[in-house]
Length: 253
Image (cartoon, rainbow, N blue to C red):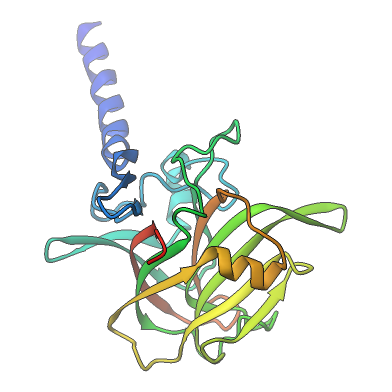
């Protein structure tokens, strides 16, 4: 019995330890300049999915999905020098979500967009989807998009759709181009275009309060629901490769 028990315990440890090492919301913290560091991927294991991220709807952490389900997500932690980052490499479209509220709709990171309205993140685009266009239903691919999801929006086909702003690095749409989808509930803003900056880290900063007011015509809630990431090439059948890092909310200068 002792031998059997020991083997079972060892199996449990083998299964659970890799996941537990990928967890750790302790990295979400306020910096000295007042910024809130949401994710820099440093507390994750190389080759794993990011430990604090969930499926698109925020229902289940990625590490709690089955091994087969995890394989359908083409995001993996990588390291370069002393820095870790998240890489997407593939074709299939699957969002990953970083929830900013818990199951009781509580603001778990004490975020107030009016105090830290600047969303900052880094992207390095390696391979863009060919002829992609985020405003076209049959070419809606992107090398790198980051979404901020807010409160529930207008009713669409008897179903409420969350309001969101999608900041995207587009293949064909020019920087500054805007658009909307999902009955106006998803607003699109192009923050970079084409291959000019491919292979280089680019830092983006957007004022969420100003963008929300401009895109939706009213004031945003104090705290958003989630941050989402999406890279994909399935509509154009393109291979896509991009890196993400240093997602934070910052005070306005």
